[in-house]
Amino acid sequence: MNYPLLRKLSVFSIIGGILQIIATFGFGYQYQMGHDTMGVAVIVGLINALGMILILIGMIAVFLYSYQIKASLNLFISFIVLFIGSMLEVGGMWTVTFVSPMLKVHAAELASTWPTPSGEGLMISLLLLFIGWVYFGISLATVKVLPVIPAVLVAASLFLDFAPLGFISYFGGIFWAIGIIGLSTAVYKRTKTEVVQGKDATLANS
Image 1 (tube, rainbow, N blue to C red):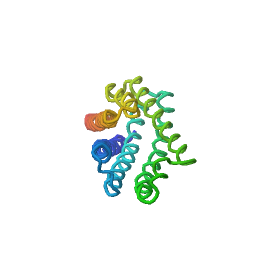
Image 2 (tube, one colour):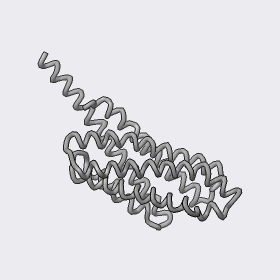
Image 3 (cartoon, helix red, strand yellow):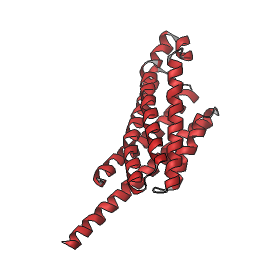
């Protein structure tokens, strides 16, 4: 396996996790503190979408590293669901970032309802996102290739993130991002160590 490539990919999700934390605080500033202007919505939305894209790239490294060491059908299926759900959600984020602020100014009622078929489409993407990440987190925790606590955080935090708990729900996004950073950091450190060990073994045999 190309460990240098996996290490580089894991950096993407570390950065993405940091951006997600920033976006979470941004959403709190936007909605909880009453600063829901077009400018704030676009900036926070862009940070959120970019963070998810980077996380999705990094999760390729997390999956490949784990699957190479301990192949699991659950891990494979959960990653496919996660990838599809996350791609759909990125499309939804892009729409909300650039379309929703405009609708709030020119068609406030339309922006608040998201009528058919857009409402159903967003719900399907959110459902796949939820199932994929929870399933993936549980699968990672089960195979125990990477640290279990970040994997559990990735799965459990989604329940808090999707729960209608007002301000408290924002902490779910933070815990989820911390779990992502933890998994990605573990891949980064382990692939770096294994590359160094491989080079040492090569030198010893030469």
